[in-house]
Length: 171
Image 1 (cartoon, rainbow, N blue to C red):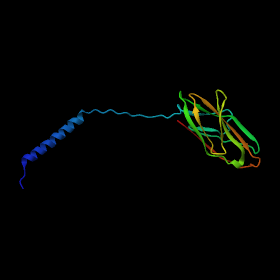
Image 2 (cartoon, rainbow, N blue to C red; image 1 turned 90 degrees about the horizontal axis):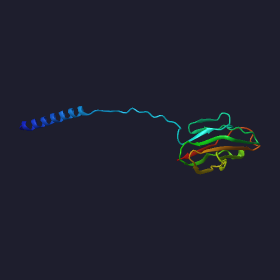
Image 3 (cartoon, rainbow, N blue to C red; image 1 turned 120 degrees about the vertical axis):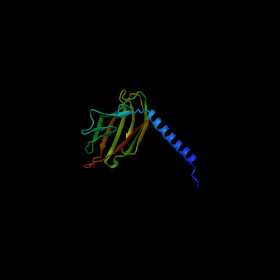
Image 4 (cartoon, rainbow, N blue to C red; image 1 turned 180 degrees about the vertical axis):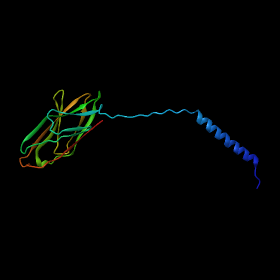
């Protein structure tokens, strides 16, 4: 087999040329970078605000509120200024409130969450916490809703504890 020096020389020349172009091109580029960070706040959207007669031990951690209610058997406990839902935006939000884990009905005569427009005092809805009740509506721009809880235990409820969960989903 005959070695073709002409073709080999052309190939080596093209390889060296490509390498030189790559080196020169790399030297022409300048690079710029962005190092960024993001701080998360609850500055927009909806926000929880603890009320004056919230139960002792109430805590708000971002989007979650813990309300440790105490009720004596056979009595009604009203938490009238317990919790507020504040819209921090200049636009309204659609909202769906759902009881995702209902309280144990055998412990209570009634267990309700009343929703009021805080500015007007108008009742918006009553959510029954003994069922998987729900409410859908709109929280107006910069509006504040007051959430009142009524816990009416049966006289036969003498000890123990119970839990419930409510989900507030908004757009």
